[in-house]
Image (cartoon, rainbow, N blue to C red; front, side):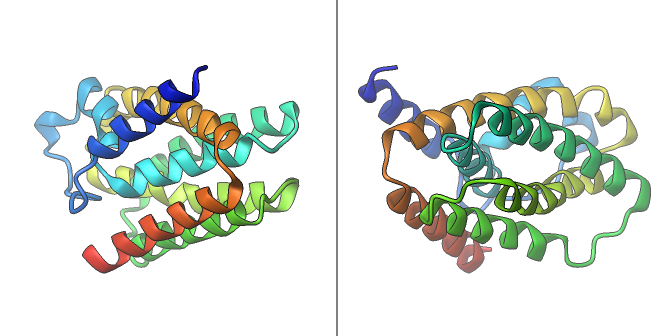
Length: 185
């Protein structure tokens, strides 16, 4: 992939994300496949987290990368089911922010191996959990497939960014995004 294309893809993804709409809630009428496709692009928290996971995978072995990416999709889905079934919402947003700071640190230090991947996966669950709280039960069959497909696309873009940019720059950018989300809302 040409470097210019990677830059343009990253810029396009960033411009698609309104800063203040991290978790605006989902109108049940709009809990469809297209809404699922668009949602990871309309929340800076999702976008930054998925790009970070993709970049984190760029430094792992092929087997670890595959486990990280498929694990992320599985944990997002499992988190959504838990949120839908339990309705428990105390501390979810704090855990989402924690996941972003953890990924920023992992990127900054070029973390490799099982521990950073497990920590990232454990905290990624809360991104899915928030969706489970917001969507109707039918969203499991409509909204979630779209979201998981777009999550795969964004992680692929993150992988390209991880292969292109220095880890310290990615970590600093990820940390700045987490800080911005914390300050704005």
